[in-house]
Structures are given as structure tokens and as C-alpha cells.
Image (tube, protein in one colour):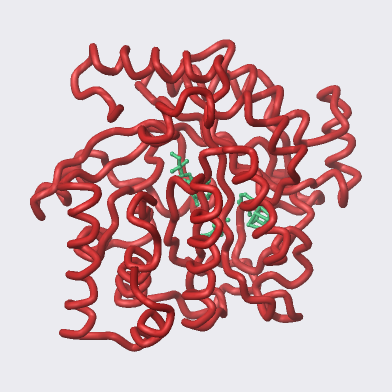
Length: 376
Ligand SMILES: O=c1nc2n(C[C@H](O)[C@H](O)[C@H](O)CO)c3cc(O)ccc3cc-2c(=O)[nH]1
Ligand SMILES: C[C@H]1O[C@@H](n2cnc3c(N)ncnc32)[C@H](O)[C@@H]1O
Ligand code: MET
Ligand code: SF4
């Protein structure tokens, strides 16, 4: 692990200096993760696109006035999960807006029609339904959650996650990315990570780069994640995600981070974070995603043969065969993993409740009988 001040010093690393930094990170990655990169074959389930927040970069969120504002019905959830299962998907990624019913009458009405008064209760039951009726493992990405909410969801999700985004409080100011977003206060985000640790939930988090934060803010965010992992050991992966500007948002004309920015941040993340944390960057948000490999990533996240990335719908997934080729061109192989990483699967019932332990084991053995298998 590098020191905080060394991490800070890489802010402008470019050319040969950036190359050397990436090499250092790639060596650490090779030593702990080997010559194999991973991804999870998933379907995306946008349970609701209404939200009480209004992040400056987000096009996923729909105003209640929009005809597109909705909740998926239980039938739609199962249809997506079943179609995914046919295509050999093993993860159901529930990604949704945060507590829309606390802000919008339309959300309360739609929930009531479904027989609920809380989005998180509906989420719980839809995860349970996917578990009961399909072979997929739910991963919950529902934003900031309390200890009780996380505890309630643990038996119906194999893993959970929430992007920290960034620890900078400046982003909450008027005109900034997280203005008027009660769920994006660093305090609430850090508390969610902490409570997930107390509950032994295999947890995904990450930073969104290029949203108005400084380089020091980025380093501080990675250090905050590291410290919670050192306390609880529950962080399975950290996503380094690049902001993409979207038409129709307040950040439509905002400068996007460039490839060097991504490489520099990935490398520093690899060097700051403990080696057992997976470093993930998405392949659909950068044309030259192959160069993330030499910067130190070991994972591409969820890739879907069925559903689009609803958060970045204009950015199609590359074919899995293309990702595989990009890996092989640099001397790496590509393998499928489950939503919960293998080293979290075998710790008795610490991270998985008994029902989920069984479900994970049967997916692993079923995959072993098919070509390729999954990492387990
Ligand atoms: O398709 C996406 N998947 C996203 N995922 C899914 C992720 O790639 C996989 O579900 C996990 O790696 C588990 O396999 C997230 C998961 C989290 O827990 C937190 C944030 C994200 C963000 C995205 C995203 O923007 N797009
Ligand atoms: C689920 C995650 O998706 C990310 N997210 C939301 N909007 C964008 C965007 N315009 N570009 C890149 N990532 C985005 C946020 O980090 C959120 O937490
Ligand atoms: C489209 S974002 C999905 C998850 C949640 N609303 C968050 O921002 O963390
Ligand atoms: S990024 Fe998540 S919290 Fe922010 S507006 Fe979009 S759905 Fe809501």
C-alpha cells in the first residue's frame, strides 16, 4: 500500500510517469489476482426510476410528471429474470431510485397499487420472488440504507452495493452534482458502508470520477473505503466509474474525465486499497476500455446479454467475446464470476444466510457441468 502523500503526488502523472505508475499497479494486481479478469453475467432490473434525489449527472431518474416514471410489476421482474436465466445469466441486479415515496405522490400511488407503502419493502419481496422462481442471485444497488434496512435485505440478496461517489461535502452545494440529494451526503454513504460491515454483507462500492471533485477528494474517498474494509473486511470490490455527460441533465456540458484520468485513478486505487479488494471498471463507458487492464483492474462488473445498462442506456455493452479478445491480446483470460466473489462464499454462514449458501453452491456446481463454469 502506498502512503497518502504518495497517492496525492500522482495528480498530474502522465507519459512515462503514468506508465510506471500503471506498471506498479498491474504488478500488484498480477500478484494477487493472477492473469485472469472476471465479469458477472447479469440482467438489470430497474425496479423504479423515480427517486427523491436529483443528481446532476443522472438520466436514470424520471420526474413523476413523465409518462416514463414507473415501477416494474412483479410479472415484469420475473419475465426479465427468467429470460436472463435462459441466456445463462446468474445475477439479477436490482438498481433503483432512492425512497421516491418520500417525495412524490405518484410513487406512493403506484406503490399502493402494488400493495406496498415502501419501495424497500417491495424490493425485498421482488428479490425473494427472483430467488423463489429462478436460479438468479439478487444483487441490491438501492443507494443509502440503514442498519435495519440492510439487515432485512441480507437474506434475499447474495451481495449488495452502493457507490460512495465521493466524500467531498462541496458537491452538495448549489450548482454542484449532489445539490438537493439527501442520500448523497458523504455521512449517509459512509454510514451505509459501515453498517453493511457490521452486518457482514459482501459489499460493492466505488467512486464516480469527474463530477467536480478534486484529485485529493478522490484519494480521500479511496482511503475512506480502505479504512472501513480494514475494520470489517466486507468490501468485495471497488468500482472506478467515469462520469459520462448526458443531454438533458444539469451537467450536460460538463467535461468528462479522459482516459489518462481513468488510468491514473485505477492505478492509485489498486495501490491504496488492500489487495483482496477487486478493482472494477465498466467496459461500456470508454471506447479504449482495454487499456484499463494495464492500469490494474481485474474485473469488468456486470455485463448483460439481455438488458441494457439503464444508467448509461446510450452506452451499449461490448460483446463478451470482444472483452475476452481485449483480455487475451494482453495475455489475460476472461472468466465468469458470481455476484458474490468466491472468497466471500466459503466463510460458513458469515456472508450468506443458509438459504443463499445453498443457492450459490448449486449455481457453482451447475456451472461446473457446463462449459467454462464460474470461478468458485
Ligand atoms: O450496469 C451497471 N451496473 C452497475 N453495477 C452492477 C455491478 O457491475 C455488478 O452488479 C456487481 O459487480 C456485482 O456483480 C453497480 C453495482 C453496485 O453495487 C453499485 C454501483 C453499480 C453501478 C452500475 C452501473 O452504473 N451500471
Ligand atoms: C449506480 C451508479 O451509476 C452511476 N452513474 C449515474 N449517472 C452516471 C453518469 N452520467 N455517468 C456515469 N455513471 C453514472 C452513479 O455512480 C451511481 O451510483
Ligand atoms: C441510478 S443510481 C442507482 C442506485 C442509487 N439510486 C444510487 O444512486 O446509489
Ligand atoms: S443517481 Fe441514483 S440517487 Fe441520483 S438521481 Fe439517479 S437514481 Fe437517484
